Image (tube, rainbow, N blue to C red; front, top):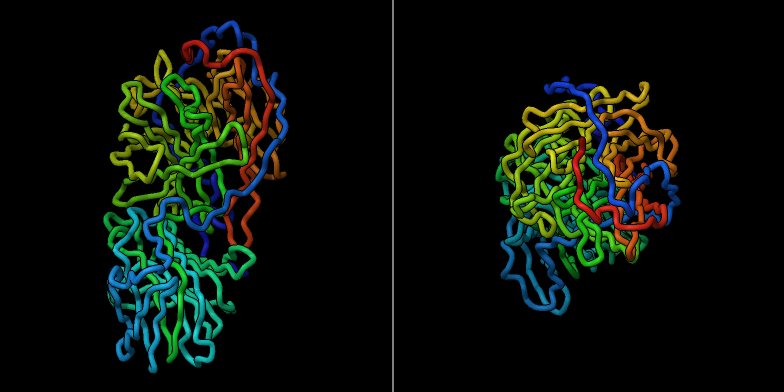
Length: 542
């Protein structure tokens, strides 16, 4: 395995999360003192986060090359050749003879051929994957014995990953306005049958292959967007899912093609979906949460996905939605989205960290807000009207009786703010905490024993604060990898007539062959306490 060239402004090789925070502008809101939280229901009164003692019960990597949101799936059981536009990007070569049916698509000729087959399908955001199952190749060609997968507008504009069996190499071709640029040519050798995939995620092109032992990241290249940026307004839908076959002479055959929105190499930044009042959003025994679906190359290649966690089986984490953000002339995979149910029932408020264009605006991360736009929990959505809300990252927002509250990682440290409106215009800072100079992130708001608290994570601990950001203590829970800022997503879930407490987090274990691909999904449990935490109204934050 080999990693491709280039670095991401939002990974360990460029500007990391703590560096982005240091570069934030000072918050433009006034500071004020906080006060105690309203009384708890009798069943939970007196319980504190410090009373909870967590043990890890599950840890796994929810890897997927392709998400459930598939726009093209053709196993060639019938003659589907008419579905595809056949392009010929190389003058002087024939398109060859196309045969489709009985579980196979073949292209062949007795002279050099190149067929690029474009489907009518595309994605609305630049987070796409095309997978081809290669059944057979020519085998004795001297120049071209190649398969391609990628995104195509026309013969003068495309981005394709390729494998040439004659040259024993993979690479990425970017054609922009008729100018062809070859990228990241890397030695590789695959024996048919094998699976071959190309991903375009954010600013990064990725070639991935499975020769029978699982998916291998063969090459990634963060320079692709500099030649062809599909995040720009209207670009992604113009580039159709496509695949190609090219040879000196002979026949190349495929058994299946699939395409749609990209999956993930791992998960990071888990965040709850919450009801109005702050209770976790649970339907049919499943907890709804968001997480950053990690790409192969750090922040810019990642995006927000929506998941359900089966509360009867913590290994059953299912992706059910994706949320992209339209802002600043691009459709972006911003991170760590918090979705809050609107009290009027018009959908979900969205709060997301602006890492989706970290290569374009390095060091300028903040939290943007988008108003409710219907049900964002299932399917793929691009939210509109995003505006800057908070000078920080990792927002956790709740709507309580006396206003809107946010915990976020500001320049000075974990911070709590309150506002009258969900966009946090004119917000008042209730307190901030620099944690004695120890970096903490992954700020979360959670109610325990009827009181609301802020939590954050560092390399050393999970810290607990009151709603004025004063330190209360540390959570009794393993943080995971040494030197890694884990994030404490604490949540109650109903368990009979009581409450079970879960702590959902992740680690920095990388997927082989790529960088910034953390991590493994981790579930910790503190057991059961009497009464349902949200058995009464959510109370107020002050």
